[in-house]
Image 1 (cartoon, rainbow, N blue to C red):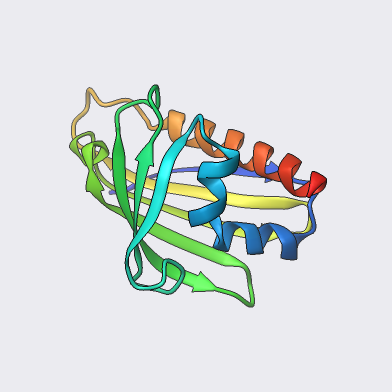
Image 2 (cartoon, rainbow, N blue to C red):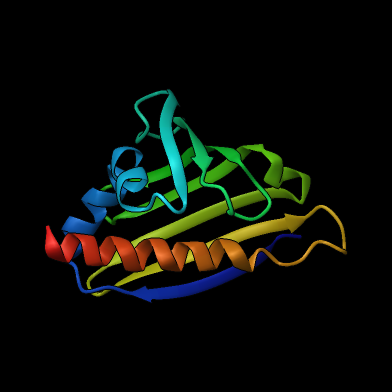
Length: 146
């Protein structure tokens, strides 16, 4: 049975602008979040549509992983909901599956992480939530300035 971490990140950027930035994260995130991402590239599809796969290479110091491939599971433009699963990477040695779902609303991003630990000794992936919090905070600041 999957475990779940949920949280809400408060943002000041307009929802449409934030949603557009998330949809363009392949280009944007390595530029504004170099402490988290070395690069992000699309390896299947367009990087935005359901079924697309992106390769994320993480910066030195990111816990438990140097890279991950994520597959878009849901991209609902009307309701601003995005969901993706990790399909490859060292992180899957610790978690049998990881799925992130986020919904952009006025003034907030509702964020959820579903996961199954590979063993009892594996800690909850709180560092992923912490990284997401930093990413949303920095993205919000960037969007308010640009």
